[in-house]
Amino acid sequence: MEQKPKIQISQTGIIKNAFEAAQIGIWHWSVNSNELIINEAYAKAIGYSCKELAPYNGDLWTSICHPDDQETLVADLNGLPQTSKKHFAFRARLKHKNGSWIWAQVNGGISGYNPDGSPAEVSGTLTDISELYQSKNTLDYRLQIEKIVSTISADFVGFQPKDLDKHINKAIKKIGEFLDVDRCYVFQFENHNSIMNNTHEWCKKGIPSELKNLQNIPTLAFPWWMKKLNMLKHINIKQVKRLPKYAAAEKEILLSQSITSLLAVPIHYREVLLGFIGFDSISKSREWPKADIHLLKTIAHTIANGLNANASQKVLIEAKEKAEESNKIKSAFLATINHELRTPLHHILGFSELMRMNKIPPNEISSFADKIHRSGNHLLQIIEDILKLALADSSFVKVRKESFKGMEMFLQHKTLLEELVRSSNKESQIELIYKPTPNLVNQKFIADNNKINQVIVNLIKNAVKFTHSGQIEYHANISDNTLLLKIKDTGIGIPHHQQKLIFDFFRQGDDNSTRAYSGIGVGLAISQRITNIMGGELSVQSIQGKGSTFTLSIPVEVISAVKAETAIELSHQ
Image (cartoon, rainbow, N blue to C red; front, side, top):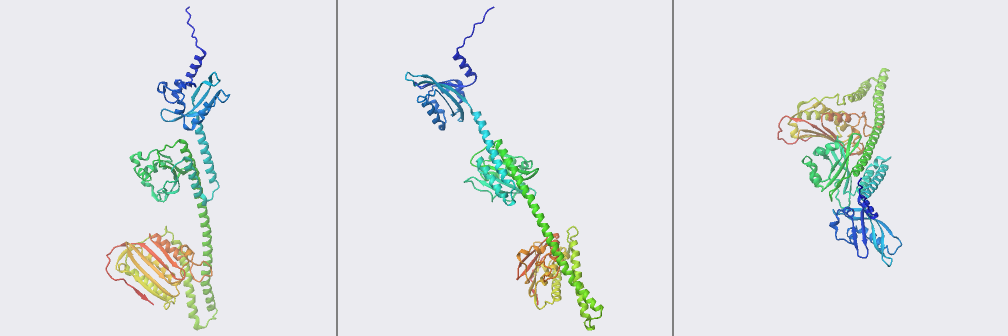
């Protein structure tokens, strides 16, 4: 049987083959001649072949080494003769052919000496450890992210509602600085997500703020953007200028802010979209890695919990305030009813008891009967006011429109005002002034005349009640299909802090049971509701001690042309 020749490989050849198989770079440097020998694995690590690098010498080290690492390399090589150390190891960044930097582990030692004992030859290996460094950097980055998330989350634990904005601003500042972005911001939605507002913003130094410019923005103008957010998906735009045509609206507004790249993440509590948080890159195009997106989603979740907790807290506070206000109204109502009902009842019972016992002189019976009658009317008025409360609910009230003339309405109001002043015995103290405009008295229009009169009756009653002397003015005008009626008096006026309360039920400027003016405080509240039902507005302007002006604005339909006449100005004293 023929025997195959044995293959003999030297120890040096075995080691060389092992290095080549392991793709480890090998180098040998002759110190005396500065000659450098490398293998293909060495050249491949920096993106070349051996032929591309040839001829080469020891200067190759410094030509491809990162400037920040050259000092270490030179110190280790030059330090060999001065030390008893035969081996060295260091890590350095080497310039790759494509312009990037790779991390390399360089190990070496003295492999030959000169007769004087100085190093003559140095040999070693080079290994690409970029992936190891990348893994380490990724791990360090994640640890930093977790630290930031932990810090921000801790800030939101047990926060007070008044501090929410402060915590959000602090959070986006930390994120913006950590990720080195140009702008970080929060938008919140309103009116069933139909409007969005930029509520919080952080900008790098030198980057202009957009906070004031991005308010009350209709979300319908950005269909692509809102579609993504409504699906609770993030928006990752690497280059704004390359946005597709279906995102033209978004592209236009982003380019107007000089934004190059953008990342936005929805802020939502469970499945309810509340807003979004975003990063802008202005100075350069930027890709957003998964770690950044994960960070933003985590912070968005934290902010969402804060916004929801704040909203829930506000609801509780409002409910508490409403309950307290309800108790105040209840107390005011009971005090009012106790005073208003007892007074006429005492009169009726007392005077009638005297008449029943024949203790009144015959010539005074008529006077006592008149007092009983007035007290009965007062009591009836209170009962009617209470019954009107049931009709103040819009579900029970219907608007019944009819056509009527402005002159007819004006004369009704004029007659009513004169009768009320006369019955209050203030004819000599109050001057009445009427100012209906010509375009009102000579037109015919369609509206609910009865409800308009009901509101005006309450306004006129109040003007007469609270004016001891001076003037009461009646103004009437119609413009742009809107009827404007004003009742202006020089009465006691209303303190500024009470001007909103007078439109609540059972509330007057004075809620005490000993107040000077009668009435249970439902007239203006009912008037306000009736006005709202007609689609109008009832408002007040008042200065305490100088008088009040109530303005009723009601939409009407004009059905006849205006006649050119001069304004009417009447006065009665």
